[in-house]
Length: 126
Image (cartoon, rainbow, N blue to C red; front, side, top):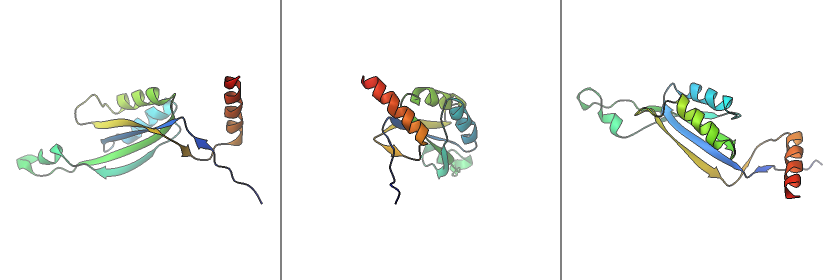
């Protein structure tokens, strides 16, 4: 019987961005160019002031794309900055981004990567 081992990542953070519909692809591309491995994108509806801005105060659809990207802690600043710039977040109404430190995360990590990280950690302890 084979033993299954969980590789737990503890030095990671979640970058989340809620952006205008149609912006996610450019933002994810910028994040990947900055070192992110991938992203999850889903759709959401926003609520707030924008709903009342239509003609004669009628409601506007506030559809959003929400991007979630998990990156190592040493990549957070670089990836966050590239996402911010690609999403034109310095423009009013374009979206909102935040970072959440993760206590732990798990996914498949190839054995050669685990071996390299283990060796690197052992070297740093010496």
